Length: 226
Image (cartoon, rainbow, N blue to C red; front, side, top):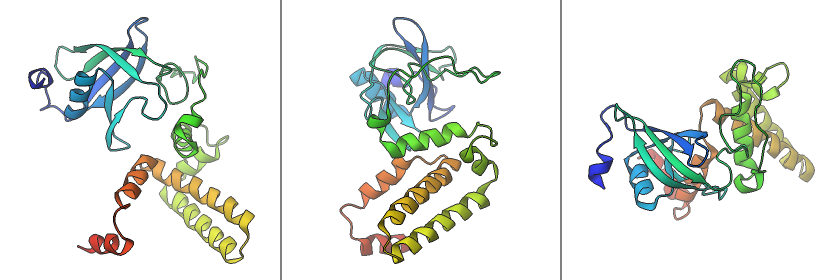
């Protein structure tokens, strides 16, 4: 196993670019990254594992959606720094519900394939909203509030987070349940916009919350001071 893994020139980078191709049609489905551990898991299990830069962890393809990738073969390029894997794709490869992640024509912006699977139930509303916000980065600010907000920069985004937090507090103080839900939704959206501007996936927030499960709040706060 180590002999195979060491065929990669890891001195160039810690993350290996991986092109993913449908084994039957040769269609390019996606591009991702593997570190050594992800490559070892992929070789051992023949199930695609990647390292997510936004989540900052290894993830098995399809761990949330069930749209896994069974690896048929591995190929390394002539410079030993890029991998191509051929897979049997279960379901779709793209989080948008399309078969391939490559569905937008660069020059015209034309969408060239239709959504085949509704992935909202699989990923959950928070992750789906985060991905949508990421997609809006390239939208026209004249037609997209998210794009407009992102185009105005950090100060505008943070001002909206503070504003929405304040509006939630007023609703809470007034014991207005309907407004609390409404303002909490607004605050969540603007927090996700702020996270997306830094490419921080909400998965990392989930990881941090999970880390604290067996730790008291007092202990956690004290640990920050050390």
